[in-house]
Image 1 (cartoon, rainbow, N blue to C red):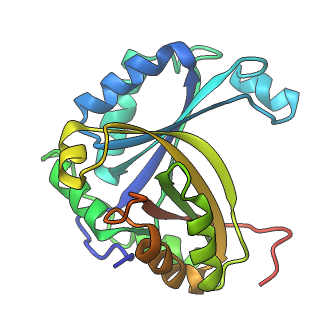
Image 2: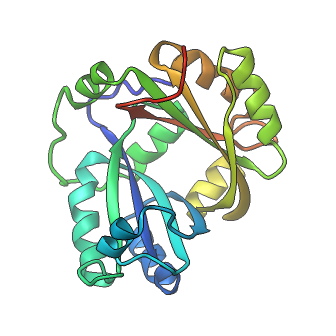
Amino acid sequence: MTEQKNPQIVPRMVITITREEDQKKLEEVFDSMDIPMCFQFRGKGTAPSEMMDIFGLRGTTRLLTGAFLPKTQVKPLFEMMNKQLSFRHKGGGIAITVPMIGMQSCVVELLNHEKQEGAGSPLKGDETEVKEKSGYALIWVSVTGGYSDDVVDAARKAGAKGGTIMKGRRRSSERTSHHFGISMQEEQDFIMIVVPREKKNDTMAAIMDACGLQTKAHGVVWALPVDEVMGLAD
């Protein structure tokens, strides 16, 4: 099941861009918040120089980290990151959250299990509004290195046109690794696939059947809303 139906969880993906030397501090913050799984990449900014100057990111290697959490944990996480890291200073990095419109049910259950109590009530109807405004979805897939072609093949059979492949790392908590039988730190292939919203469920289901967590690929699949698309025909 790929749709998130539980109104008590409104998932977000938090994305941070930080200095490499802040990696340990960031991971300590995630561990203290019981965030069970994160994904990390290294790269350099390619935005126009004016934009890079605004964020203070130009000319240095940066660590891009993505992690899942309920919407109710966003504010406490941002408060802790602001205390422990250097977001207040130029060049210290940035953090954003993106609403999610699809996720494997087992990962949703994991987030529900890890969610701290007393964090407040989610905004009801939030996910429905996001879906209604999004004509496309960006499907992100994380699989063990070497299985990216299997993901793309499965997506194409479901009607997708292809995807973009990147290399990175997945870091899981000890509880998550034990629960799913995956290593705590694992080199990963990441695949980004943009599809019309009506094809999202079929595409995610096909990928999970071929490369899900219960397969040798140990795949994690999630979807993000896309507001605007250029250069992509239906």
